Length: 535
Image 1 (cartoon, rainbow, N blue to C red):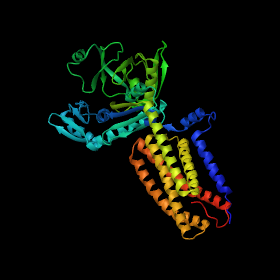
Image 2 (image 1 turned 30 degrees about the horizontal axis):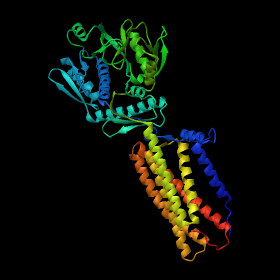
Image 3 (image 1 turned 45 degrees about the horizontal axis):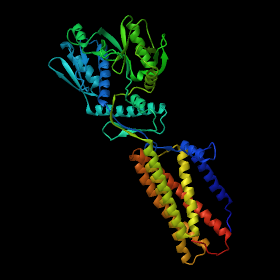
Image 4 (image 1 turned 135 degrees about the horizontal axis):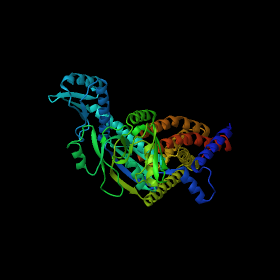
């Protein structure tokens, strides 16, 4: 009985057209150059094929611990003030150990009250101890330190990814490198200005506004002399930015910032009254409220705008300011103003970044990899197709057509999803070709067994596909599970291999089973009942 295959044939051709569109989109022409350009626009090349920059970054997570400790100092000050405890001075005495805080000069009659405040509010984060000299020591618990470090690493990854995305780098790889090492892997395919990308990645862009306690001083010694030889426990010296000289003035600032980091909601490049580049920033609601409270109660005093541990500008507070300000007078060029506003919009890194490794992959290496990978894929595919024709005769044409459609579906999927093709991805394509032929071999050998058992061609094909189906599904599922493990625990190129292999196997289920069966049925429709098939 002849089968009506019209619907199935339409489905196959529709699938073919859809995935051809996925590969090329709508090209500007039909010439080889136009098709090649269309293909390049749809399927992106990874770092190993396109060339680009490979970086390994070390996140200095101790700085994030120090920033948390500084915030806790501010909270301790507020809590002591709220309980009418004066004289006690919370401080962070050792920069090398930011997890340790001390509360100095505790009045003898207030020791119990101070202990009560510290234990009520900070015992969950710190181990608290006291000494005979009326001081308390707060040591951050190891679990708290690890949590801060992990959050700093995660925030650094997200911030760097946001910055790189805004620069328009396509298909970057930004992920943790070496678990437990607080390192980040960054791969940027096809970057045309790696120096700028590096500068933007590594800059912490820590914009802060501090209260000015004294200055300017010509040098650090003068600052110390003006303060009786020692700095206040809650103060720090900071140098003013001077682009033209290594020398510069120093200011004594209150250590804890009024607003900083996540308090900045937006920033845009602008120009000052003299048409020089500067940056205008807008604070969040919470940051704006704190800024308003400080400026309204400190009119006539000075505040400093600090960028990356350098005083950029000192201004006298003329009136209350809520949520908007301007950074000028810092020797900005148009590019530096653009870069600073970008970094503030994407958020400050929680800690500074050190470059451990930098490698540049040239595009010529990528071109060689593409050429060799494509040649390997073509050679492998031609060898397999030739073998199928030689060994299975007419049925080999069936397998070759299904194999070609499998490749079109795989490439079309990559085009639709914007997947990145890497050298391991090409290996996945080659492996998919082998897996696709393996499915055809299982089916064809089963059909041969049924024919040798005396079945008619129609019955042999039915039995061949029916019995081989479970084996094909079993082999594909086990391989897909292995690919899923590679995707979950692998990094960039390994994940690309896993994705390519997985979708190639799914496409193979369609081509090796459905398409091959339709081709066999079409052949049977053209033959007389009981006429032999070429296999």
